[in-house]
Amino acid sequence: MFAAYLPRELVAPLLDAEFAAGVAPRMDNRKLNKAEFDAYLETVRDQQFAFQRGDLLVGLQGLAVPVFDAEQRMVLSLSMVSLVGQRDLEPDGEIAAHLRAAAHEISASLGAQA
Image (cartoon, rainbow, N blue to C red; front, top):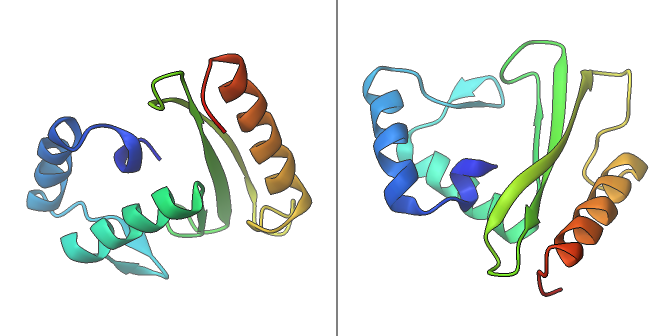
């Protein structure tokens, strides 16, 4: 989530170092190359959520949504992680709707524009 929203000049050196060290992000049980990861970050920004299932640790899933301040900067992320099958963390599910609503409420309280 933070890689998608923090300023590129802040994030790029960190991501470059991870890719150089062979620590590539994973999705669908395979490592992503830099172009694929950049495309994923663009999707995260477009959809305003990140969802992963089993890519970091087998059996775990996670959903995260951004919270913005008055300058439309992401200042925190609301996230939920659970065992696969324990909770419905699908992006179109009830928990996701509650996380989004809470993120919008907090963002509004910080002065973010809808």
